[in-house]
Image: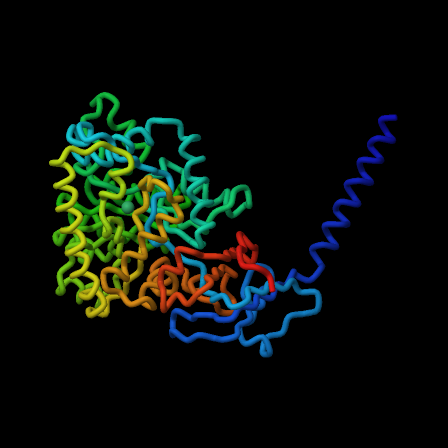
Length: 453
Ligand SMILES: [Zn+2]
């Protein structure tokens, strides 16, 4: 009896191998996507009508329907009059945070009080819970048309590298992730203060790697290398020195990792420029001289218009505000808007390379994480950036900033088949990007709300 069962098992095994062997030899599945228009963000040219042939998850041909050739039996997706664009890219996000502004009294009690209590909770609560939050945010990102993100810290020790691998393995849906692992910080900028001194380091090490001198900076990069990160994130503030940051940059570049440096004030921006950062994140106080230095060195400015249209929209639905706090917020919102309205035209004029990120880590009432992220990047046109430049900042430019210009950011042969489509003309009305109707990643349809024709 045992022998018969073993024989049957063997037959099943052999036939399974045989079937999968046949499948491996079959030609790769081909998909033909047709649409009324296709926008090339690099040139601004519109191809109309357009067709894209996709084979094995990659773009094989782009042209008019008469020009391209798809074999008999190819799957056809007809998007009617819609406009095709490359999948969108968020150059700066935090998938593993979802901060709800705390009550006013709580905010006043902490340094960085808007952000700190929730961050501390995220670190000390269950990493499993946090991983599932990351998975939810990743799915929401993809559904909103963002097919690649660069996750720059605040993921615990291995949240973003593991989520990246789980998405790549098909376990959960989500965008392509460039994962930074733990953020490198100096001890003065740990984001959470007043910790029990006996426990402080063991708590902070779940989220950050400390830079304390050039050697520790190198070691921190190596610890992230061990975690198989795609990019190094460093926070630069007044207390970070050029030799410390330069050591981190040198170690990262040795293993072909780019370095994204959070730098908002003029002093920190200069540190990042002098140490050879690849991208400067935020850069809110950048001077014209610094923009020129960045342009000459090829350093990207990653614009994050996170609060351009105000912090009030986060506060009002969730917390009770005193008249004094409301007045402070209104004044702060106006100040930030004015600063950004001046910054964006200076950036465009300088010729510096720029891309867009969201710094998403906030709970937006009524919006998914993906919807809030697209809306955040669409603050750029409000601040004076032309629609085509905004789309470049979210596609071709961002791909170059990530070092993935050979893989994503454009609808061109050889690139991953990451596509989105909108009903209208995104150049005439950039808010079309908030209403993405079709999403494809790796040649697989994520969503298609367009009626088939
Ligand atoms: Zn950030």
